Image 1 (spheres, rainbow, N blue to C red):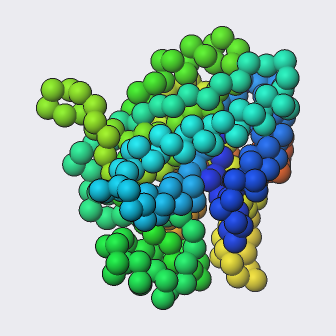
Image 2 (spheres, rainbow, N blue to C red; image 1 turned 120 degrees about the horizontal axis):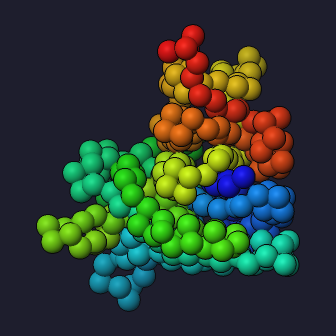
Length: 307
C-alpha cells in the first residue's frame, strides 16, 4: 500500500518539554523508529506539524534586535521544514539503512481571500499562563486562545488547495524513496494577478494538507498520528469513550474543537469522502495496529444507512 502518515508537531516537542535541540532530536528518532515499521512493508510519505517549533522561531525573530522586522511565516515554515526534515531523515535512515530517505521543502497553495486570514485558529509556540499571554498580546499585538488550561498564540490557517511539489513527491515515491514533505502544512503561498506565487503570513494545518497530499498521490490510506489513541466522546471526563470506527457523517456530528482534534477529523473525513478509502487517527506507538485497522479511530466510507 501507499500510506501518507501525518505526524503532529507536539510529538516532536511534547507539552511541558524544553524547546532545546536535544529532546526534539530524540523525539524525532523515536517517531522515526515507529514510522519505519510502516516503511518496511509499504510505500511511506511522512508529513509533520510544526506548531511548537514555528512558534519558537517566530518569538526569536520578533525579539532579535538586529532585524528591522520579524521574518514572515512562510520563511519560518520553510526553516522548520529543513530542521524537522533533517531530524526525521536521520532517524528514518538509521531505522531503514537499506532504503533511500529524503526530505523535500515544498509549498502549499492557499487562496488570498480565505476568511481564515481574519480569524486565526492555528496554535503555535509554547503554552503560557493567562498573564504571560496578555502581556505579549499588548506588547506584540499577537492573538492568543485557550489551549486546555493554558494559552497559546494563534495565527491564520487557510485551507490548502494544491500541493505545489506533488509531481516531484510522486516521482520520488515511485522511485522507492521514503519521503518527508509538506512539513508544517507546506510553505503557504498564493498566486498574484500574473500567476506567480508569493508567500503569505499563515501556517497551514498539516492534517488538511496531508489529506490533500494523500489524494494527489492516490494513497491507499491516510494515518493521522497524534498524542492520544483516537477520537473520544466526552474527552477529558470520566465518561470518555474512544470511537473505534465511524463514517465521516458520524464524526462530523461530534463538533470537535477547531484548534485540536477538529482539523484531524475533517482531514480524515475529506480523504475518505474523496477516495472511498480508509483513514485512521491514533497514537504513534500503535502504528502497526493503525495500518491493520486494529487501533485508533478508523474512518470508513459512508453506507446507504448512514447517508
